[in-house]
Length: 126
Image (cartoon, rainbow, N blue to C red):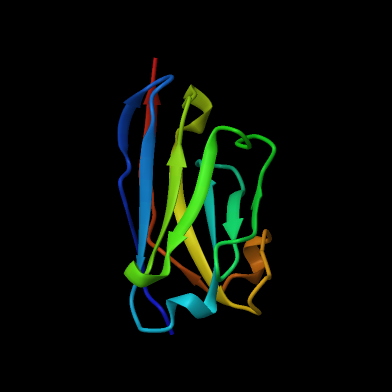
């Protein structure tokens, strides 16, 4: 089992940048494929980015490709989401997720993840 805690959210102006962190408990972080999602009230949770266990393979939603970068540091049990060129429509609660997976697997479906963090609010202002 793994527990996930997101941090790094906050208020940022449009065009700015933020880096979210997701710290995982336990000693088997490198066994988990990781993903980032976001959700706004009244809408379904939206896939943003995913990364395999080693960090060598990633996948992005078209809406954030070229603006967001997912990466991980297995020594620190942490996965990150670096966000550039933020837009008003990026305002949401951001969640990280984990699932034990084979080494090269990248998971983009929210229904396949077993563990979720509590979320961190990102608000982009004009």
